[in-house]
Image (cartoon, rainbow over all chains, first blue to last red):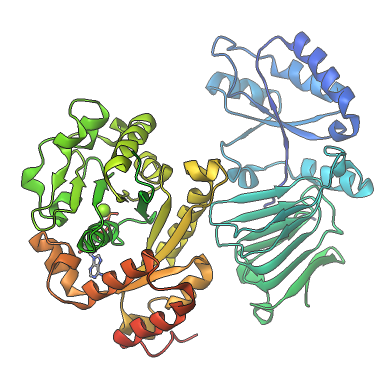
Length: 242
Length: 276
Ligand SMILES: Nc1ncnc2c1ncn2[C@@H]1O[C@H](COP(=O)(O)OP(=O)(O)OP(=O)(O)O)[C@@H](O)[C@H]1O
Ligand SMILES: [Mg+2]
């Protein structure tokens, strides 16, 4: 019937600065007016780290209701103390751990991310709404080192240097690497399953397109260290030598 | 006042125990041997290793932290080497913890050292925390000490990323020159595939090679007797460090790099690559 899988999905973080929800709703409405498509059905995480310690009690049920009214999809919270976390759980929110990396493991809302994928693919323009101005292609000329993360929001990523073990490339569009790919590369992270990954030498720790992924041990050994193109075909990752 | 040629060089690695302190002492002493006024600064607050390796632990009265906190001035804390008048050390404190270092304090002390010294060698502690970040923050160049094994290479890769983003020069969009120094290189283990080859490491790190220091008993003897390898008797490690300093000073031109590399490798009887 279904399969449980890990996945890495960008979520919009919403930093809560106070507990006055009426004020919050007002400001949110203004924000959404500026880029309605970007916010439409976007999954959001509510961050509590910036909250004044005096704002102990947050009415999470009300907060969820407000977000839903604004056509946002509240997924969970980050930060906050135990009382707030308990109240958030009560309101149906997930508790996400600190630090971006863990997000993929604790992302316990497969239906919601799937929903986002579907939404994005049926309407491929959504991901570009955020940066309408300027070229969305990001070009990196220096090696991407272990521990570094590069994200090309709303466009393609081109790397003209090696990508090290322990580094991570993310793009809403395609990823091109003119060098060895030894780290992780995730294309189409907002759900574009037509996105592709190109690299000169496939030595990756992980490759992913629109949430479909393979870790290095699942990659067919015959492609190791070859120049390849990776795409989604019939719903699965497909690797082809260049 | 600032000497135009004054250079701050950090010796760093990420991973611990790879040979940073050995290298700081050996390269500092060799620069002094060649007539350059050099100071080696110990950033490993709380451990204090450099003074032992340089054989001046009994002469430590004031230290780096005292100078930062203005409890002593630089001239009181600097120790002049007994063997070479061009060589100085600014020792770390054994009693303080690494939080005693502040960015402003480090910047001020290094600026003062620049007025006196041609080379300021910063011996970084392991890791990528406060002490290590401050050791590299004001550097003009970096020597990345790497052992030919996967975890050391990973950490070096990470520290290169840190050098590219967290140094003052990087923040001013200036280049920070990086040198790869492979240490504890053991040919036998490379051949058996237990260690990475020079080419493997260079391929991953993609920065110019400064030198290859063999695994050597001379290093152990040197640190036990408190004599930097380059001030001690002739040895394979001494020759390799001298060669590295020649490259550091630009005496060996880039175009001859291939030549000297194969020369070193031959000297170390390294004729074959690791099995693929
Ligand atoms: N080329 C070499 N041959 C043999 N032993 C070596 C060599 N280089 C370093 N060592 C030994 O390795 C150990 C660690 O060296 P050293 O203290 O210089 O490393 P470090 O990187 O400064 O360590 P830490 O991260 O703890 O500061 C010492 O025992 C030293 O004698
Ligand atoms: Mg040390």
